[in-house]
Image 1 (tube, rainbow, N blue to C red):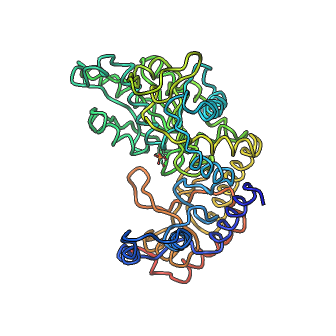
Image 2 (tube, rainbow, N blue to C red):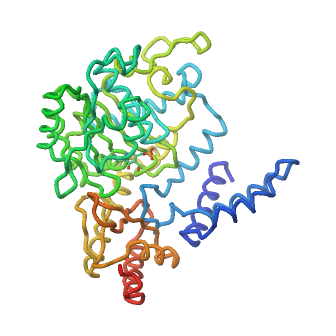
Length: 462
Ligand SMILES: Cc1ncc(COP(=O)(O)O)c(C=O)c1O
């Protein structure tokens, strides 16, 4: 067997184990800690024995996010190319901080990101980097936007910015922005919550009104965050209208497309991302809908000079800059040392091609539509509207946490609960696996129907 075939067969056998095993674990912290007590690291152990033990732990003590009936929080089933890429990256351990140290790896990343930047409609001067995930990409966006709006921020800090800077987003935007406001020194109160319409999309009239009021009161608006595929309900903010407001008001336009960004490759969905080409920056996670292992975020920015102003670094101990068109990633992004994150996206794209990816994404959108239809036929009420495969639903009087506990205990599927626009909890199911089939969806809806019928009053609020 070649090395490639060995890895393929390992990945295939793990996939099969997961598919045939439980989805949701039942374990306490004490049970795991008791088990781990045997590892006092006092004397060496045989590696194969420890690896077997770790695999047993992972097989039984985790939510299996790559199971076809994990309808969860954007954690995907991973491509085999992605698994191989992570193995190869670990073994060769390239250091991507500077171009000079890892020319091949840096060019593979640059090539992959440039291809995707073009798909988003960004200009050729766009610089993009792989990040640990969407939170780091969103952090990068806020730092770069601050640097552009307030040139004194980098050297002298926020206290030397005359007016208080503020950012606009909706309550449906990802919570990472609250942490980012905290970490950057803006303060969490710098986030302005723009109202949403009943479809949970940003209300642009409210955005314009809040902007005018804030300017009048002496605040310094500098950034709007639009979400293309909100975490809870998959809503896509009206990107073209927000882009127009940002242009007119000289504001940084960031699109958080951490999950939804992959729809740009799907002919039936990409129209919903119209307007993303006007973004100053974009967050898009490869470890979500591009189906590669964690952690692989991406940050795209159309202003190379601002990126370099925000993240420049000069030290004598790093290799000197390479002449020519090459960029040293540590001078254009948050991370210093960095892993070969981009290989998993490169290998997966190279293997499946754009058309293969379009099929995987459209398949999941179809499974989402099927789920919606079968739920409605079975008396459930759908409470969100999105072309993306995330379905929020409920039924009269349902106690969502009791229902989920029963669903998980019976290993029917993994789903979660969520509150939309601060309302009552509802169920949330997202198709995150390209291996989810119609049979999986039919099974889940049928079993959920039995659960409600058999358990009757026990599933209802009392
Ligand atoms: C819209 C959105 N933005 C950002 C993030 C954060 O991404 P990560 O978990 O990769 O840091 C998420 C995570 O689900 C998300 O849904």
